[in-house]
Amino acid sequence: MYLEGFYTYLQFEKRYSKNTLEAYSKDISQFQDFLIQEYQSDDPELLRVNHRQVRAWVIHLMNNNVTPKSVNRKISALKTYYRFLLKNNAIAKNPMAKVVSPKIPKKLPLFVEKTGMEELFDVLDQVYPVETEVQRFVKQRDRLIVELLYSTGMRRAELLGLADNSFDRAQQQVKVLGKGNKERIIPVSKGLMLMADDYIAERKRIFGAGGPFIVTESGKPAYPKMIYNIVHQVLNHVTTLTRKSPHVLRHTFATHLSNNGAELNAIKELLGHASLASTQVYTHNTIDQLKKIHKLAHPKG
Image (cartoon, rainbow, N blue to C red; front, side):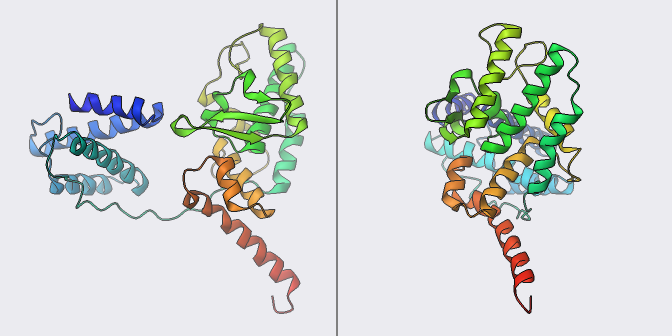
């Protein structure tokens, strides 16, 4: 009863994404399984849980090499659920009040150097076969995908959510639907807008009007793994980074903006971050640039 209401609350009132809902549901289900195995619990709504049981679960997760980041997300799922229960007078005491989240070591975002991005677009021109109509379309589509991710910093899910009418030709901007169903506007260059228009015209010519913005080579809706594979394949030619995902292009977008003097608040708005703290990680690259300049320009550098 309460869990069902909780998921409805997250979906329609908090407007959580499908991925977040699935993650929270999985996390809470794992906690239920732990309580059954370790405590023979008969408490499907988790109304009689105490902080010692939650701590025991956290220790269990850490002992099984679950990363601190994943553990923190699971703790966040429980904290959100117990706040919901308190709000609905289902419990009198919050068992999460005494639970401390493990510290997460800060990792600097991976990004592609400017020269690497210049090489990347050369790669797109060279490695794609263009013998057939479909091959020419795939090359055009994949270049647009990479250009959009790098030039706007949008997330993969935001890219997949684009429609033909997401683009405002007069204002040279694109509207994306971000986390929490929050819309934001991102400016784009005239060249990118023309590239999008050419792609749309070619897609309509081959597959007909209607349908999603990004499609497969058979005209079906694109999917997350497809976008990942396209970016991974292209980045393989220009970088030795351990990760070669669409998110690396988002990091590259933000890092290049920061290194070229963009204000942190502006980068925050372009990325759609809820708080400035999420954006501050990109300042490290500006500091790296300053160190290089200091070393080259100062007599004692």
